[in-house]
Image (tube, rainbow, N blue to C red; front, side):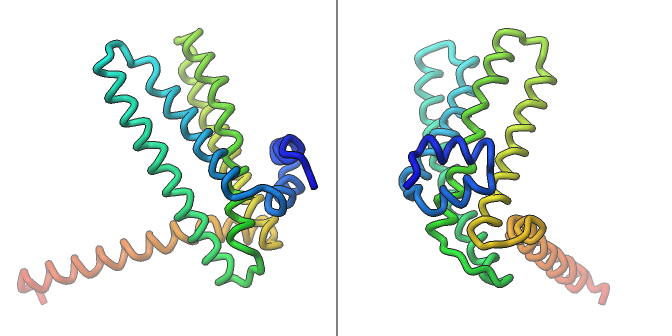
Length: 192
């Protein structure tokens, strides 16, 4: 059995091996705590500079709680859709293992503290802070790909396909709705 610190170290510095360890020994509750902590860090950081009064702080707390709950809900739905997509393309993994590994993929979100602190100390370096935030998000997405690949035994290219499949299906559904609405408008207008 691995300690949690070993798993965290491996997820950050050796992602493929770390995701295999995370899938086998991290509980879904601990993974949920990683997700909540990562999103809570970001939510609190983005609300701090604008809190001047007690009235604003009460409103901000509600927004932070809502943002964290929405983020956790989106994470759970994403894991469910990724599991479904992985099984559709022939993966042989477990949703519980993907939940644990994907939760560990949220660890880079804790590093949002660094560019946020730099932005508060040096406000003129906004572009550098934005680039750092984008790098952290890209790192998190890459860790999601590694989690899918590790849990289901996929190559990275197939894991990217699984990661994008829910978005591709949403795009196809929206395109079909757009076509149906367009045909209906043309039909109602007497052009056909």
